[in-house]
Image (tube, rainbow over all chains, first blue to last red; front, top):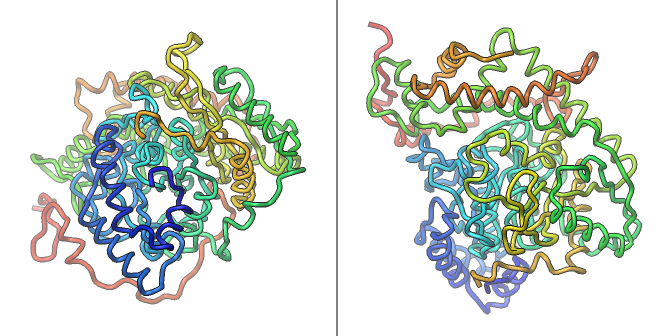
Length: 498
Length: 95
C-alpha cells in the first residue's frame, strides 16, 4: 500500500481488497511513527480520522463511492476543518478549533475522502523552509539535515515520506511548488480563482491559491477534480463549467511548444539543478516537443514587488487577530490598546511581525505611491511578459528553485536570502497563472553562495517547473503525465523510510 | 530612504504590535535589509502603466439582498477568550 497512487488505492477500495479503515489505519501508523520524527503534522486525531473512514466504508457499501472515497488526505493546517485544531502554525491560533469547514475541505468531505491530519507549515504561510512554524521545523524526508521547503513543508514531506497518499497546500509565492521540488513530489498551483479561498486562512488574498500535492501528475488531476469549483462565498472564485482534469492525460505531446525563458537559465541556478532540468528538457524533445526561447525580462523584479504586495495584504488580513473573538489573548494587559499590542506581540512569530510591519509601512501615509502603487504597476509588466511569452509557446519550463534543499538553519537568519530562493516561482503568482513542479532528478546541493563544493550525497531532489497559460491545468498535467510515463523520478522514495 | 528606530516604533504602534526596546534594533536591521531589496523597484520607469490589483480582470458579483447566514453566535463564542451574556469582553474603553 505504501507506494500506491490515489488511482491504485481507489482500485483496491473499489475491488474490496481493502477497506478505508484499513487504509487509514495504515497511514495513521506511519504518521504517528515517522511523521513525529519529521514533525510533518501539527494535529493528528486517530479517532476522528477513523470515524471518517468508517463513514466512507458505509458510503461505499451503499454504492455511493466516488474516486477518492475512503482515501486519507493530509491537509495543510491553513484550511479550517470543523472540529479540528486549525493553527496556521501560529501561537495566536494555537487554541483555535475551527467552527466551520473551508470550501476545499467541504468538497473532500463530500467526495468521501478521509482527513488524515493537519500538516505543519510556515507560520501563516510566510516562509520558504517551514522554519517559521510555532511548532518547529519539518525535516526533509530525503535528508534530515535539509529543509523540506515551505510554506507547505509538512504536506510535501507527508507525501514524500508516504505518510499520506496525497495532500493539500496553498501557494502565495511558491509555497506548493517550492516544497514539492525540495521534497521530491508533485505539486500544482492552479490558476488564481479556480479553488475557493473560503475557510483558507488568508495571507495575501490577491495571490493565495490552494492546490494539491501527490506522487504523480495523474493523482494531481484526481485531486483537482475534487478541489476545483465555484464558491459564491469567495468573491474571487471564478464561475466556470466543471472540468475533468484527467481528460487530456493520455494525449500525445508531439509538437507541443515548450518555452524556455532565458532568465530562468541565467546565472544563479546551481549546477546540479541545471543538469537535472537540462536532462528533463532533453527528454521532452525525445517525446517530440519543440523548444523555443522566450523572455521574461521583468522577472528579477518579482521578488521586490512581491515583498511589497504580499506584506501589504497580510498587514490588512492579519489585523483580525486581536485576542477578542478567538485565538490567543495575552495573559496580562492594561487597556484595550495594550491588550491588542501584547496579544499580537506575543502571538505572532518574528517573520510574521516583520511582514506586518513592512506592510503597514508601505501602506502608510506618504509612502503608498512610492511602494504599493509602484509594485502594482510592476506587477502589470511582469504579467504582460507572460502574455508575450505564451504567444510563442504552449507551456513554459524551467527550474522550480535555484538550488536543491538547503540545510536547516542555513538561511533562517537572513530573510533576504530566504526570499530570493523563490525567484522562479513568485512571478507566476503575480500573474495569477497555473504552475506546477514535478521531480526530475537529484543533486548534491552546495555549501552556500558561490561555493559549489559537493557536500551531501546526491539525495536532494530537483523540481522541474511547468507554467501554463490561464486555465491550462489539463494541458500541464498532460505533459507532466507523458514525462512520467517515460521516466521514473516521481516513483523514487526516501530509501530510509520504506 | 533610511529607516530609523522612530519609524519602527511608529509602525509598530500603527500595527498594534508590541516591539520591546531591546528587539527594536534587530527589527530595524532586518527591515533595512528588506527595503534595500524593495528599492530595486525604483530602477524601472512605470510611467503610464496601469496598476494591477488582481490576477483576473473580473468585476465583483452581485447577489440577492437576502439573509444567507443563520445565527451561530453560541458556536462562534464558544471559542472566544472571554464572553459574558453573549458579549465579547474587552478592557473598559469608556469610563
